[in-house]
Amino acid sequence: MKRRAFVKGLAGLVLVGVAPPARAGEKNYLRLRNPRNPSLLEKKHVPGVEVPLRVKAGEWFEVRVRVGYLVEHPSTPTHWITWIALLCNGRKIAEVRFPEGGPLASVATFRIRLKESAVLEAVENCNLHGTWISEPVKVEVS
Image (cartoon, rainbow, N blue to C red; front, side, top):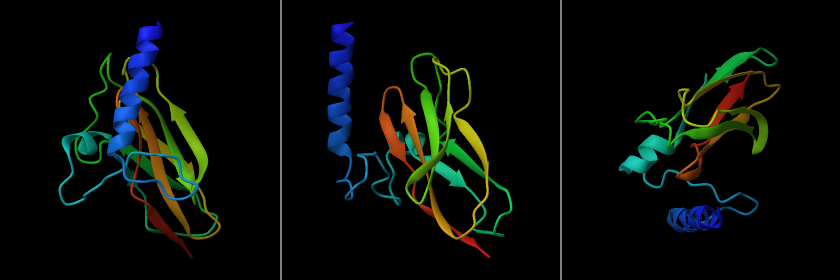
């Protein structure tokens, strides 16, 4: 058991090394480094946020998050997404947890409403490749 924890710790150190520096007050999430030339790892792990760009104040709408914005995450017994969270202006407002072993597709749909324009982001955690954050999406409220 100690060896497993040690190996997981090493993997985390390696992953942190490839991430760009975090902004002040931001967790050290992995993110898309070059949108024009994403790596296969980024294609499979950066969450994609599907949301209307304009909504009416106080009306419910859906936000769909897909892990792997260009290539679907594999979700196998040894490689799966443990959770997906939705951030609104940097604050977590919803989260879905997935069972161990990858029996479910790495997709979550949240039904939310906003009073004013906001920035939405999705964060996901892969049991092997760390915690990734989406590109921010501005939703205008009228």
